[in-house]
Length: 445
Ligand SMILES: Nc1ncnc2c1ncn2[C@@H]1O[C@H](COP(=O)(O)OP(=O)(O)OP(=O)(O)O)[C@@H](O)[C@H]1O
Image (cartoon, rainbow, N blue to C red; front, side):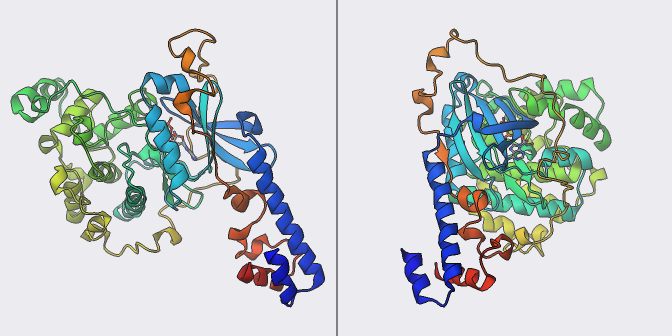
């Protein structure tokens, strides 16, 4: 009615008036269809696997009715329950649904069936930072600055919504088709259980001698290159293991002392170190030793001379990998942005600028920036039908997962039919509407 009234008062031909009304009707139909339809896994054609984690897998998929390509993350409910991750998976779904930011992967739907939870997200074809780092070994100062700066903005945006990630690592930094970074994987953190280890186990030199000494005496000190080779050999195995890699987790999180947003700035420091040195600062072949090194970071944070880090880079890392009360970022992200290592970064425009690397992406289904996964290797097993301790909890009506289902109606604008948010772009101009009318429509409705 509003449109009809405005059109009647405006200088728009009758033909264009009809066309605009037809277009709006189409969009409304799409919206209603979405509202009525109960979305399920059968609405998607399942394509290549692009990631595997402790709880399931990520693959690209195509929505059958619209042909639109997405990334589908599939999580096994029994595994979530067994590991007490139900609250975390809900937090992930809430954060993705709530935070609408350039720096956060966009969620379109979440739903469930008896055995699995599903997240349907935008597909980011540029790959993840773990894969980029494995392919490049180390980054230059300028390249690292770009990714660290975008990570600062991503962390800042989740902190603004009062979320703490706790498990920021290169695997969770994804790249879009232009090479810009987005943060993903919220809440599914799997820190090693260090609760049995007491702080004094790590802080005193005596107790530390244990594992560390073993490591030192068993193997001669490695060069940067040797350490990098060991790291790369173990990296993927750690990423897909059920415990995950503890390399980027802050000491206060490992010690379960209570933690705040500062823990995400520690992870940023560890990632920045890895970008410039080739492996993370507390790397050890054994994850438990990594944990010990992290909580006793004062004795273990060292910059290999061969890495030739600038004094500004070292200073920033030192100010991120330190005690919580001295950590940069404790008083907000601006503290970090003001550090001299970031000199010259245009914080307001960085997402509009060219990325450090532009990924090669040939078509919408291109997965060349991801590792190859074998379909048959570790398939996500279906829980045995009617037995097992979790069985009685596994139902799509399961109270544990109530409220998980979600639809993002922005999809009508983003994909299904060209909509309001796209009106600015003449690219989306339907052929039957004149350009001038289109702009009028945009300005008035
Ligand atoms: N939206 C996406 N677009 C492209 N790739 C993605 C997307 N989401 C995830 N991936 C790929 O899948 C991998 C695993 O994803 P994610 O870390 O979210 O899964 P997970 O099962 O929660 O893993 P984790 O073991 O880290 O908890 C990522 O490292 C990335 O390579």
